[in-house]
Length: 165
Image (cartoon, rainbow, N blue to C red; front, side, top):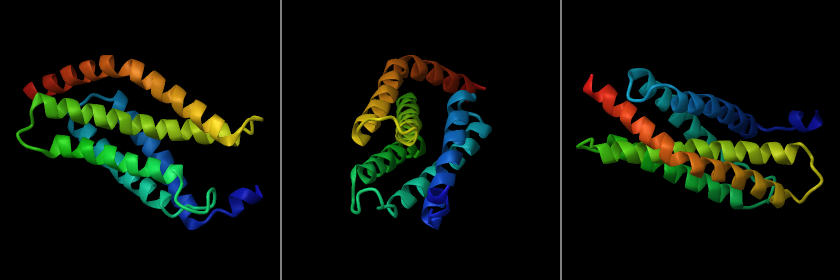
């Protein structure tokens, strides 16, 4: 428990933002798309992800310098930006909606890949750190890639139905 007691405000902020982002991200994925509730949950997710990524740049204990997780935070921010740019652009075409769905899906998937990587490392399996991180990330991304087309097609149809109402 000494480890938890040594967490900085930045670490705690990062942890809370991550937990909230996982909750909001999951809700955004499983709830109906194109509704007012979806937009509100999405805004909460984006706010949590911005906090999560901002605090990530303040954490250097693992490598002592800019490391692979900081690079992942940059990718996360770019994915989030691409998702929001697609949905905020006008005219709002079916392709822009599809791009929003794809980028947001990968944003949430990247968040869960990071979570599973962290979990693998914390479980203290007797293996090299980067092997565990790579295995957890790879498995999450592989499963996500397999499911992507089916989910995006379903969500696109859902959004089109909501827009016509």
